[in-house]
Image (tube, rainbow, N blue to C red; front, side, top):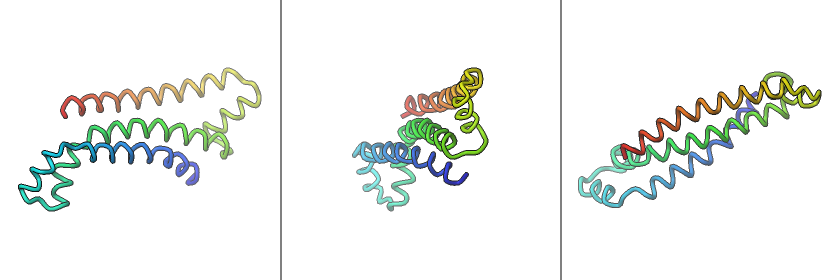
Length: 130
């Protein structure tokens, strides 16, 4: 179980890290200069300026990372599981059981679309605020 979760998480960490790095790099220089003028320490600069400026892009990274994590976890389940959803799907594929394949796929799509819709609404709200 731990290996399958790790396989999924590895897929999701990279987009979150890339979006976070991009957000920090694209922080307006005037914000950083203002922090220096106010003589903020590095932890205060991160807490007061960099993190709030990066939150919308971090949320976007989480949305993309969730999708990739879900794909990675399902793939890990499909090829390394003896029960659960991935095994059920692979077993149904092997037996050409179209009803089960469609049902499992439908459940995965509904779950992914629901979570993605929630994260997209949060993402839009954060980008409007920024």
